Image 1 (cartoon, helix red, strand yellow):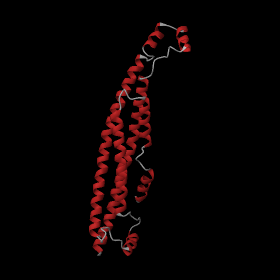
Image 2 (cartoon, one colour; image 1 turned 90 degrees about the vertical axis):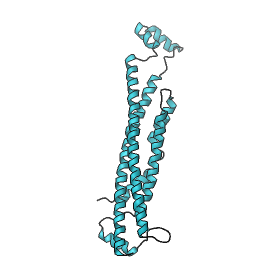
Image 3 (cartoon, one colour; image 1 turned 45 degrees about the horizontal axis):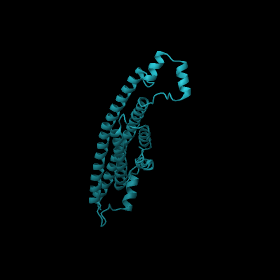
Image 4 (cartoon, rainbow, N blue to C red; image 1 turned 120 degrees about the vertical axis):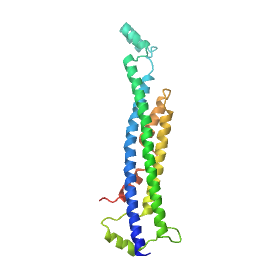
Length: 228
C-alpha cells in the first residue's frame, strides 16, 4: 500500500466519522420527536377515556340515595346525559381531533427523518466500498497496517473510528429506528373511538418502552464520535 492509498484511507475514515456524527444527530432529532408523539398519544387516550366514561350506576343503593337526596332538574339532566357536561364533551372532542392531527403530523415528520437517516446509510456504504477497493485482501476486508495506524495516530489529535465499525453500528441503529417507527405507525393507524382502555394503555406503554431500541448501542455509537 503506497502513501497515496494510505492517505486516502485516512480521509475515508475521517469521512466515515463525519457521516456517523450527522447520522446520530438525525437520530437524536427522531428521539426528540418520539417524545412529542407520546404526548399526543396520551392526550388521545385521556380524551377517549372521558368520552367512554360509564354513566352513574344507579343500581347502587348508596348512589341512588345520594341522587334522590339532592335531586334537582340540573342534576337529573346531568345524570341522563351520562354525567358528561356539554362543555366538557365539546372540549374532549376538540382535544381528540387535535391529538389525531398531531399524531398524523408526527408520522409525516418522523418519516422525513427516517429517510434522511437512510441517506446516511447509503453514504457510509459507499465509503465502505471505496475503502475495501483500496485495501482489498483475500477476505475482502480493509488491510490493517500497524505501522500506518501508529503513524496516523500521531498525525491526528483524536483517533477516528474505522469505516467498517461506523458502518456496522449505523446499520444496527437504522434497523432499530425503522422498527420503532413501524410500530408507531401501526399504533396510530389502529386508533379509533372504539379503542378500549386496555388497548390504549398498551399502546402508550409500548410507545414509551420502545422495545426495539437498545440504549447501550446508542451510547456505544456516541462514544465512536470524536469529541473535538
